Structure formats: structure tokens, C-alpha cells
View 1: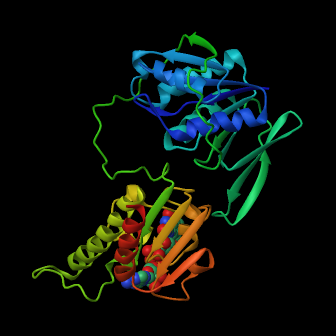
View 2 (view 1 turned 90 degrees about the vertical axis):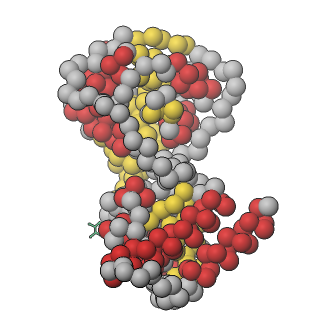
View 3 (view 1 turned 135 degrees about the horizontal axis):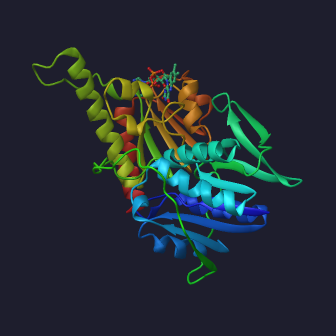
Length: 338
Ligand SMILES: Cc1cc2nc3c(=O)[nH]c(=O)nc-3n(C[C@H](O)[C@H](O)[C@H](O)COP(=O)(O)OP(=O)(O)OC[C@H]3O[C@@H](n4cnc5c(N)ncnc54)[C@H](O)[C@@H]3O)c2cc1C
């Protein structure tokens, strides 16, 4: 079987899930080629070999310097039409999803999105993916060729990089098509560790604003005071996250109430994450939030309400006020981690 793995990157900085996808492809068997598109991205070809690719298809063009899905899809679809891989793997990032969808249209195939496990079934890949907000797992096959699959980040193990490993480097000619958009610049999003790559996430919900011991500064409206209180709560969460080298997540209620930007939202309409450790603070555990984090290896919940649904999914639960527990946990972690 001929497997292509698309290496997703921003300005030659690859997302870790691209290397996980190479590991997943190797586990299926067959020839594994990494597809590296961009401009000034030779370093990614070397990394792809080190993570296990047998071949790298390197397509470079100035028009591919910035990711614009139409250019990338034109380039990738043309390559795949010529070389006819059996399986195309992408990481489930926003770029990966968009590109996989467009390439599937061009190649008249389908896409299995957010897959968490794969196995061979005859000459086809049988993919497992969560459905109904993660309540069920579905096993499914894409019957068209190439089969196109996006893999959930951190659901597959990242191979150990083997320094100095190499393979066949094939420079490919890319056609990038009509440009429908121009990129004028990038704005720094800030916020430290990326949510989707994080192995530890400390999250906050509506409970962050509920601190009866905190009096908002004079002159604030009720809404402003609520946001101010929540920001103090999220500052405690950020401190714990910093101690643990973790990313900061949030529920949609916290995002909708303007406590924290949308980029931090975890859940059905936010980011889907699978860290080793997820600490949920003042989050009730609504089904839509669980859809984004229930695959975390260990869930810790801190909530005032002993009956909060999140406790049904948590390995460890602390019933109490997050404003007392989070700082205490932070001190304990600092002492332990030095
Ligand atoms: C179509 C759709 C999509 C959605 N997508 C998402 C999504 O992607 N992500 C998401 O999160 N939600 C999503 N939601 C919203 C979801 O249904 C819930 O409303 C939301 O998750 C609730 O957020 P919360 O747990 O922070 O707030 P609440 O449900 O209000 O819970 C707050 C919790 O904090 C606890 N608490 C209060 N004070 C304290 C304190 N001082 N210390 C400790 N605990 C305290 C309370 O006991 C309570 O359990 C979606 C909803 C819909 C309809």
C-alpha cells in the first residue's frame, strides 16, 4: 500500500501531529512518503526522514510560502492524481481538515475526520472515530481511492526521531493555481503552550467568576465586575499552568462571557484535545465540553458541587472552591517540581 502523509506546518515549523501521522502510517505497513509543501521547508524533509518516512516528496514554490488552502489543494491534488497513493493522511488541524476536504473534492473521494485508531481490513483502512460528541466510537471505511483520513492529535504515538536517518528525497514540481487571497501579515495570538499539542491542560469555566471573597474595584458595572473576577480566577489557573508547563483551556460559558478568548475553548465547537492530564476548574461537565476532552488520559475535576457531572468522568475529584484549591495545588506542585 502506498501511503502519503501530509506534513502540516506553519512557516516551516511542523505540528507534532504530522510526526504522529508518520508513526501511524508505518504501523499500517506499506511505503510511507511524507509530502512537504511550502517555501524554504527543506528542514522538514530531514525531520520527516528522522521520524520514519521512507520517501519525501518536496514541493517548493514562492506561492506556497503562506498557507492558502486553494494553492495547497491544487498542488497536492495534482501530485496525487499523478502518483495515485492508496491512502492520504493529514493531522486534524484546521489547515489539515480544510486541505483534506478540498483534495477529496478534487480527487472525488471522501474524508474520514478526527480518526483515533486505524487497522487494515483487506486492502482498505478501517478507521475508528468518535461520533455523537464522543459518546460512541464508529468503525468506518472510505471506499473511494485514495482513502483520505485526518488523525486526531495525540491519539497516535509520536515515533522517536532517529538522528541522521535519511531516505529518498524527490523534488516535485508544484502547480499552485489561481490565488484567491493574499496574506498581508500575521498577528501574534500569545498564550504560551498550544492547546492541541499540550500534554497537560488546566482549564477554567464559569466557576472562575464565583469568588465571594473578591470585591471588584469601584465604578464597574455588574458585567464588568464579573469579567474582572473571572480574570482573577483565570490568573490562578495560568499560574498553575505555568508551573506544570501546561496550556490554558476554557469552557464555552467562560468564552461566551468574555472571560477568555475563543482560542482557549475546549469542546464540540472549540478544540478537541487529548492530553495526559486535564484539570477542569469550575466546569460542570456539559456533553459539549466533554466532547472536547473526554479522551484525556487523566481528568482531575475541582468543583464546588459534589453532584457536578464532570465528576463522573474524573479519575480524581476535589469538591471545593477553586480559588482556594488551585493556589494550594500550585504551591504543592512548585514544591514538588522544585
Ligand atoms: C451547539 C452547542 C455547542 C457547544 N459547544 C461547547 C464547547 O465547545 N465547549 C463547551 O465548554 N461548551 C459548549 N457548549 C456549552 C455547554 O452546553 C455548557 O453550557 C458549557 O460547557 C458550560 O460551561 P461551564 O461548565 O463553565 O459553566 P456551568 O455549566 O455554569 O458550570 C459552572 C460550574 O462551576 C462550578 N463552580 C461555581 N463556582 C465555583 C467555585 N468557586 N469553585 C469551583 N467550582 C465552582 C459549578 O458548581 C458548576 O458546576 C455548547 C452548547 C451548545 C448548545
